[in-house]
Image (cartoon, rainbow, N blue to C red; front, side, top):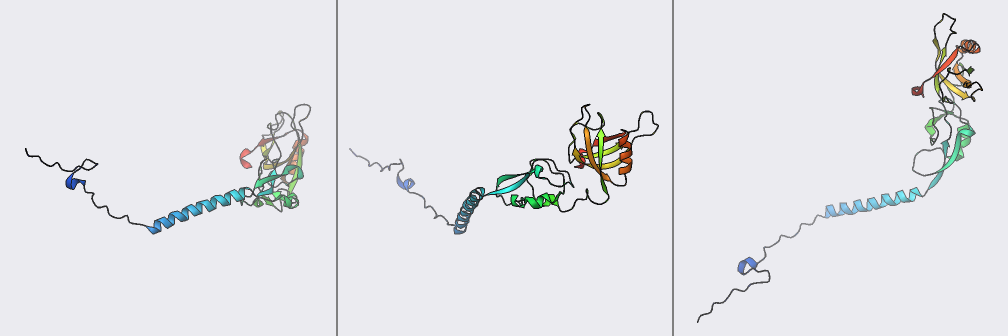
Length: 221
């Protein structure tokens, strides 16, 4: 009885030429890409380290606590000291507060704003020559509610009902210098505005007879 030899089967279940592995080409190394990856990793680690180190640095800055209208002078009541992280932004240091108190707001500054050098100017166009401060004792309905220092208003002549004259604007964009407390009758109290000195006599004349009203200009801040 003849017996036939069975082909040897490897562990993978293949026999003969099929069990031979195909040659794999060697991997091509790219040293430039590897170096770039290392540089990116090191750069990211360095940037993170700098941010962490800088976030620990604190500086004393000036924060505005009250609205300051463009052209108005900074006051002690309107600023305070705060500690902030040194982010590299040109904030005014609290040690310079005396210089701040001698300067004027270049734009209207809202409460909570951290002061930067470009927000202040040494001279005010609003308080210089050719300007006048005028006090207005306004009655209910002659001024909007919530009017505050630094707002911009139109000063309008509102003739008495018996007059044939029409209403007209006396000052197109007057700066509200201060706002007093409301009167007992519910009026807006005494409001001081800055107008051109050329119209101040007319404003005062109509204000004395109660024929002045103001309209707020929110977009003119």
